[in-house]
Structure formats: C-alpha cells, structure tokens
Image 1 (cartoon, rainbow, N blue to C red):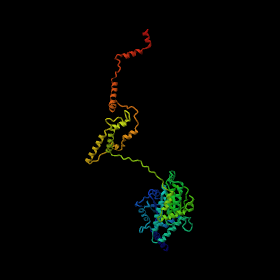
Image 2 (image 1 turned 120 degrees about the horizontal axis):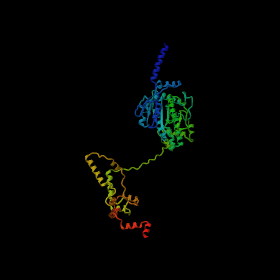
Image 3 (image 1 turned 180 degrees about the vertical axis):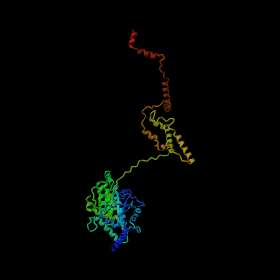
Image 4 (image 1 turned 45 degrees about the vertical axis):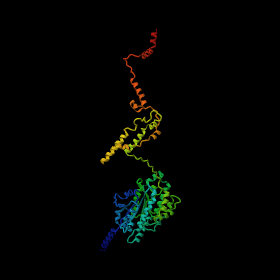
Length: 503
C-alpha cells in the first residue's frame, strides 16, 4: 500500500511540475530585409506566423526522437512540453515603438517588464546582412541596448535567485560543463553575463565576393569587421556564424546550433575562421589572443571601453571608429535631363510666331546665304513649316478647347495630340543659319513645284526652257528630210560609192 501511495503522489507532483513548466522561447531580431525569413524557414518546419504587428509569433513543433538519452535530463529540467514545441518570435526593427514590444515575448509581463523565468529559457538571434557590412556597428549597438534594457528590467517573485540561476546556466553552457568551475573561460569571454544565450548571424554571405570584386570592401576591412564582431560576441559569450543558401553546410550549422542552444547544451561543432563566407565561432571558443591574430595592433581593450560607453548611450566615438574603417561606398547619381513638354496650343502658338518671323523677307535673304536657293527653299509666299497651316491648326485647337469648356466635358486626346505634345521645340532661324551647310546640289523636283517655289524671273526662264522642249519637232518616217539632213546623209555615203560617182 505504501508503494502505491508513493506512486500516486509522484504522479501528482510530476503533473503539477509539467503544468508550471516553461517552454523555450526563440527570438529572431533583425532589421527589414536582412534575411530573417530565410533563417526562420530553416527551423520552423513549415509553421506560419501569426502576424501581430510589431512582434510576430509562431509555435514551432520539433521532433526530438533522435535526441540522445543523455540529453533527456536537460529537456525534463524545463518541462515535458519542451520536447514538443517552442515559441518563436520575430522582431523586425529596433525603432522604439517596435522594440517596446519585445518584453511580451517573455510572459508573464508585469508593468511592461519581462519575466526572468521566461528569459531563463530563451535564446536571442541577431541577424545582420553581409550586403551592407558598414551597418554592422549601429545595428549591433542598437540590438544589445534593447537586450540590456529588457534583462535589467525583468522581474519575478524571487528576482535575485532567478537572475543568479540564469547567469550560472549561461556560464555552464559557454564553458561546456554543468559545473561552472570545471573550466576557466578564455580571456575576454563572458565579460558581461546577461544570462541569455545569444547568436549573431551574418546572412547572405555569398555577397562578400561581390563586395570584393566591386571594390566596396577590401580584405583588410573584412578582417576588421570580423575582429569587431568577435570581440563583442566574446564579451557576451555569444556565437557568430555566416549563412547563405548557396553553401548548404552553413544552414546545417545554423540548425544544429539552434538545437544545442535551445536544449542548453554546449556546442560541439568545430570552429571555422579562415573564410568569412563560412565563418563560425562557437560560444566560449574565442579569446582575445585568437582575435589579435587576424591583424596586428588590434586594440581590444580600447574597443571594449568604447563599447561600454555606447551601452550607456554615448556611441559617437565607437560609430566614428567603425565608420572611418568601413565606410559605405560612394554612389554617384547621374540624373538625366528632363524636358517639360508644353501643351499643344502653346506649342502651335510659338510655332506660329516663328513662321511669321520666317516670312520676313530680311530673314529669308539671310537664310539664303548668298545662293539662289537655300536648303530651306525660298520663302516668298508661304513657309515650309505650314504643312498643314499652323495658323489653321492653332485655330482648330482653340475652338476645340472653347467648345469643351462650354459643354463642361473632358476633351479626348488623340494619339496625334500626344505625339504633338512630345514634339521638340522648333529651332530659331538664327541657330539654324549657323548650323546648316550652304547649298551645293541642284534641287530635283517636278517642273510644277519648281515653277511654284522660284522667283518671277527664274519662273519665266524655266517656263521658256520647258516650252521649248515641248515644241521641239520630233522625227517622223513619213516626212521628207530637210536640206541639212540630206547633206549629212550625202556626206556619210560609202567612199566606194563616191568613187563610182566620180568615175
């Protein structure tokens, strides 16, 4: 009977513990269009977000059937529900109105403050985009400021003990042992213990080569960016990795790291620091001495001092330090000249004025450049621009506008009108006179057109010439030859016939 009663009590205690258990929470933070959605698809197993405005949420169900038996105690420590699902939140901006919603990812929220109990079972992922490495410093500063504020303002029923438990658990994960004194941490690791595991993801690493090819960044600047991020990550015991869909191994590393961090386990994946495209620094692996190897003369302590000032609100010195070494590329914006097309009536009115100027005999004489014919032809009676008459077209357009305004109905613009509105402005005679070459070839046209466009004297000459051609007698086989033709025929006789005659 005693054993039966103990079994009943054990079942009741286990049930109560499971009901009060806290599920793991994963928060993915990153600016818009930094690759957050691609990372979420790798770990969400097809789950869909519930759009909540600033803070999006989804419940991710995962399969731990292949988890080793040695990992089960870690799962049970947070409750049986952990083996089934976890909460995933997406924060899309560090702007104040959006960042103010982050504490609600760690319920129960009291007076806008997160719960230390929920923070203890959480993981934060900060996403940066390799396409714009010059934005890494301001974004990292902003995200860590927000995380500092959330952790410092978090509370619980026993805040001090919960906070100590959080820091102890994080130190054990970073050191790789459940005993915090089992292994001393490298120099520079976990200088600030927030009690929350952090992963810095550098997405779209395939753009690094494009940046190098376009000379937007150099190899030395890439080394500086890595030293900067690795120094900050080591201070919080965080991991760093580059990801890209073009290198599947980087996505596999990300998935494995997420599982280890959510299960509160030390990461056993090998580090990779030779290639920035496959960069991976596990939590607790890096040290100041390893960071100094990338570039000599690296002032780690000076960077930490500037970082501490930035966390207190004075980030000018750190931003200037980073911006001088990794500046955004200069983009030259060449704007094409814009031409404003006037309306059709204004265009025709201006064209009409120009036609009147061209009808002036003085301008015509200047355009002829001392030649009988100019390229534009003579302007005695009407200009070459009146095809059809500009005055007539202008009158039609003005009549059309007045008619439409009187009936209060919109005028439908035809394709011809649209084409006329896009017609370039006419060139003035003065500019035209300086650009056109003198006339050098005869004008070939019909006699009628030539007679119409020439001066009176030229018309008479041409008229006489063509009339003489028309009145020229044509040869007919029935007519008798003239005296000239007969003499010509006689001279062209065969010499032998001449000899006969003479003989």
